[in-house]
Image 1 (cartoon, one colour):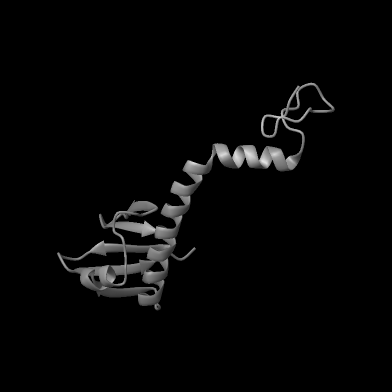
Image 2 (tube, one colour):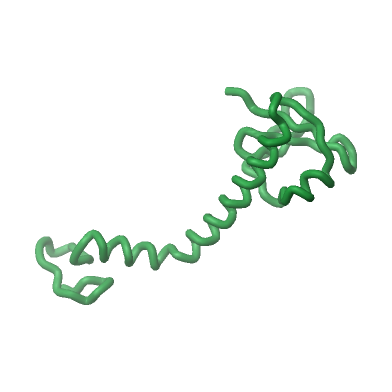
Length: 114
């Protein structure tokens, strides 16, 4: 049997597919490269959004404008969850930072406390 990554002969168990951990890792990384890059890009956007909200909302609750968030590079297309509270208020969350639009421009920021 030959290694799926490098083609070297495999020694050991009959069901082995790779000659070493390095070949196994390289093979799997190459298989998942496109997915990993997309996930990495999305995670970077979410982290940036979270840092922006954290910098503005230092007290746990604050107001800001859409214009300010956009000028800082905030991307409204990426969130981690939507929560609707008992009072009917719906917030978009990026990890533990939430926001809801009060009108076209003003936004209420909140921080989820565990």
